[in-house]
Image 1 (cartoon, one colour):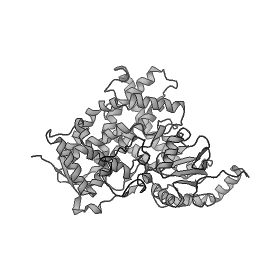
Image 2 (spheres, rainbow, N blue to C red):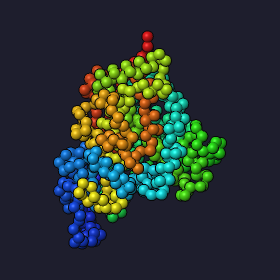
Image 3 (cartoon, rainbow, N blue to C red):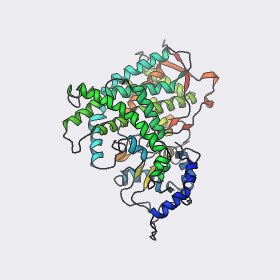
Length: 503
């Protein structure tokens, strides 16, 4: 992610901002309560200038090393607290979880998630609790995820055939991972691959890029004109319109075919849209689900099941290509487990201890969302002697926490063996390792997303040997991040496959 602020516009309107502040902000002589330390602030813009030119998760870690793991930043009008240590992450997401369970107002989430009515972006309250219950009891249960096993196996088998037919050639593995996770998620969500799938995913990718920045319109919420002047609101509305049109078509098709009446809610094999429409049709909820609410939840599912899964697989393959010893070890394990069968399925995954460690290590270094989705305090709160006022925006740097040398030996090194005999997991109880968050706001789609990661990787490592193109050496492989709400790898991953033929 990088700062998305057109500075020509910012400075053009500098005087305007100053005038606006003098009118909007009351001259208040009250002394602000003591807050966490932070870098010096400039008039009007606060600390915005200190996030220019780099990726925010990296810039924030650098600042935290100087000012501490609980740090205050003033970004425009907004007061922000940045959390960069497991201790303070635990304070926010466990000790004071209810106080920090809300979401701040963000233009992108309001526009694209149907006025923030998704499970991810909705405000903490009765509606959010209702959605959370639907997700954990109906949509994303272990039983439901297991019922989609045949979808995963069919789509991964198709991927294997595609790669086999291109043996010895350079293939764009990044593109194939995206296509795979999109196909799996589409079939799980809609029961089939949508005819509009390519357009939908194109819109979704653009949306993720747009949602990944700090926008000047969000930093100065009192100046509504900035939403239009900067051009961000029209861009978001255009993308949202495209997504909404496609979802309208899909929902209409499902309703017209009366798929929701062909089986009872909760039946294994039912696609996720059917489940939601059946719940909607029963009309026995405290807060009825509208079509827009259903669309918002479907978008959440695609983000969890497709975007984060493909990103994790790409990072993992990049890391093991860069670390040949790890590649040899994980490939040997997969082949040792499945050589007798001659094929890979999910029944023996409990034996793939090293592969699971490789996945965990990938998530440590490359968490899907490096800055966890922001929280907002609903009331004042004291943490470690510092007072956090109500309506403070809290950003937890999961990327920095996963690289904290106080908790991880050789923190910048890719060492999967650190997880082999470790109880540390990504379920939200180990605050030094929070790739999916923790507390009430932990990602509800962990089981769904991770199921889309392990089978493809095991199959690709069993059936193929891999090498870098054009004589590239492992140490030359690009490992930089690129902008977006998710931690995507800069550039595409091109590799050359050779089919493995067991003796």
